[in-house]
Length: 525
Image 1 (cartoon, helix red, strand yellow):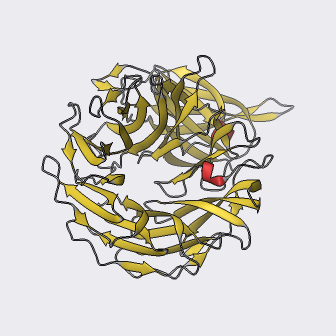
Image 2 (image 1 turned 180 degrees about the vertical axis):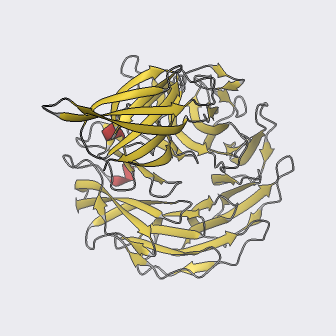
Image 3 (image 1 turned 60 degrees about the vertical axis):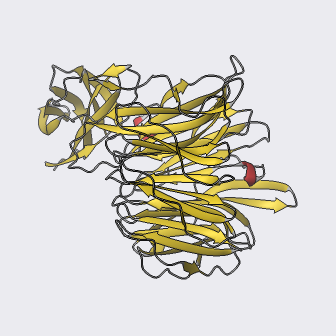
């Protein structure tokens, strides 16, 4: 028998009001914008210890607030000239925040160390920037890409350095609908060409960009690309593909490709194999997130009848893309926000028209990418919160926590717009997701049973308890199939009637708000 111990995290469902001094679901959202003033375009970023920085548009200015973990939000800082749009914000593990926005076709940036003041706005571009994206890696290196008169331009900023000169990526057919991602030492920018194809260019940070590579099929509408890069320098790219006849769209689906070891895989359909999207893709949304090697999530909106809009998602589990899951179906065009933290928990929140009371609310779910949900048959843990009048959740910010980090929880922050009856305000919610210690030292003893007319094996599993006092029970899985659970005072389980075959056992310790796990892979002689 060979035992290979491995660590796996399972789902986390948060429904306690307070735990060990850490507030978790549910808790009321806060209004952080100024009273009696309309606000728009909120964005938020959170560092590994829970410090938050939010920016939004208020009275045509870009404004910001910061919040130390466990404290109240500070006063508003005005960052821009009047008439600014499109704010974005990122923060590194040292709590240094960087913002960007557009004013009169010029992208500006400002930064601040935590507890300090925002720097004077710095123009990054010439006039004519039409859209942009900013991204940050785990070390604090920043990359920004934008489109200017159809050209695709990029700047980078290493930690504690100045912005680099502008680099140009020559797209063979112009560029629009760009996205950019950075992770480890890989930077990837993707865009939609005027020929309706999806292109990609990549490079090492502050190094030469590769020549554009056409990813999607020719002579077919492909659009809305989104990309993520993880800590292992793998890139996950997804986009919509349609047949188009004038203003009519048919046979729509979601395709994906993976970049690893210097090569892109062939495009693969990852959406519902039994239905086709039939609405204008300009009314749809798509997002990709990835943190750890071989794990990614893609979420998108769809409509198969032109009346109801869905939020769907799928996971790449290291082997293949799982069958898509449905978060919700809604009679209104639906928008969502997606985040993944360094513990591989995914957070998906969408606007939702509640059929019971006709009120527009926010609805979401929380799950872990390391668990094959189709095999384990475990539900997504949902939540439904916020008051009437909410539009989409504009932004979810998740944390990046190193294995050496002393923190015992993972901060998640989100912001959205809400109509309070008189004005559009910005609401905010932060939750600290506890990180639990798993059980340890899983052992499996194979016990032969000779009954004369037949022979079988029983497997006795033993393990050491989790160090967390919050654990209430342990659940046992064999090959992803749930077998049963025992109370936290029981540290063994006997799996009866096993054949002489390989089995993978996983023991999950859990309490009312979530799970962690340790497992062992065993091979019988």
